[in-house]
Image (cartoon, one colour):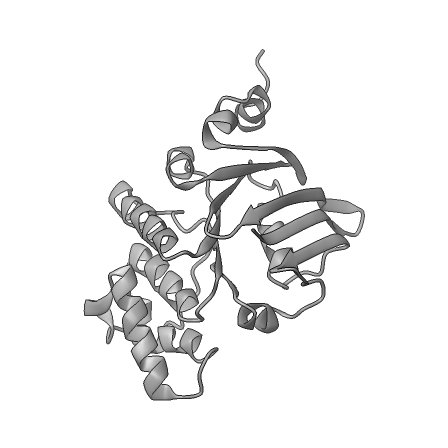
Length: 238
């Protein structure tokens, strides 16, 4: 069953088409990789899906509901949560308080929000850091904190924007295992990532965006061997 339908979505900034007639669907419980060169329009598409930008044209359906024009807080309450390329912890608050902010999307009870926060910190492996000040975490820990905060909103779908960006191999492996463990819980995930080895390991299907347009969609093996994808990343052969 489709949880997300992207139907001919375009986003224009003046005369520039950041996205142009992008279409694909996602089934519940799958991981969709979203890849493409820098500036291809991946994050713009995330912003359209999650309410930060209204699409200029086309429709976004989540669980059969048209999402066009909904504000990000409403999108989140409907069950869709996202992370950011640049992690944005509330640096002066504790780790657990950061996660409680996400939990308060679902409850007005501070006690229940704290319980949810403890649960999500255990999921991402930050239980021992719950009382640390968030600004003192490493980049890898900040990435996990952001995942914990969005998980605390109790979503049915996660959108992860370069959650492995800037990490060393060991930290990236931790995130890969976290993404796969989240999948086991039945959550749908869309992942923007430049590490092709990582995206191959985690994705059920991959959509490739280039110059704002959908270049292709397929399983990881089809995508990584496609000449058009290779050219988009490496440039044409001389």
